Amino acid sequence: MISQVQRVSVDTPSDTAMLEITQTVQRAVRESAVTSGVVWVTTTHTTTGITVNEGLPDVEADLIAMLRRFAPTEDPSYLHARWLPSDGAMAINSATHQRAALLGPQVAFPIDEGEVVLGSRQCIYFVELDGPLRRTYLIHILGEADAASVGQGKDTQ
Image 1 (cartoon, rainbow, N blue to C red):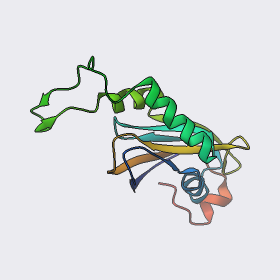
Image 2 (cartoon, rainbow, N blue to C red; image 1 turned 180 degrees about the vertical axis):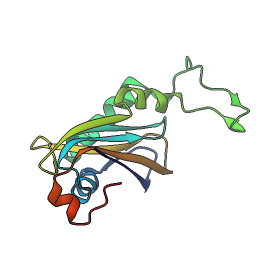
Image 3 (cartoon, helix red, strand yellow; image 1 turned 30 degrees about the vertical axis):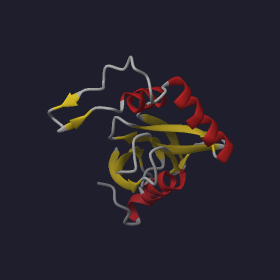
Image 4 (cartoon, rainbow, N blue to C red; image 1 turned 90 degrees about the horizontal axis):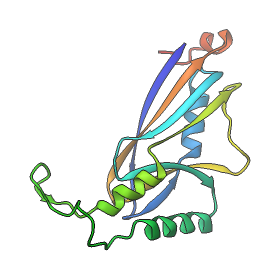
């Protein structure tokens, strides 16, 4: 059994952005020795999300618009709008936490014959909701390798 965790850092370009990361995930799986298993993609932040959708600009824009409708920025009922001694700043980002909760922090896909199994239009997105910031997500690959892949010197630790 092989287990590999890769940390990927990204600099997000704006307060809200959808970064398509499908090729990065596919490359990580191909470069691993895993031929059969699963790959998880997980954000390490509470104001970002990981999601899967069709890779079209209008779909991306519609998703962001929907998140803003469901969790509007200006809502006087938010309780997460107070001084946070731990941060030394005002908490004014309740909406971004709610949006992240709607998206979720992780997606998983099977690996078969060394490839990520995706639908024909599925793209994996890292979604920034409180940027621009330097962010990190994880690609965790878990599975089995065939003997030929291991023998070709691929990293299997």
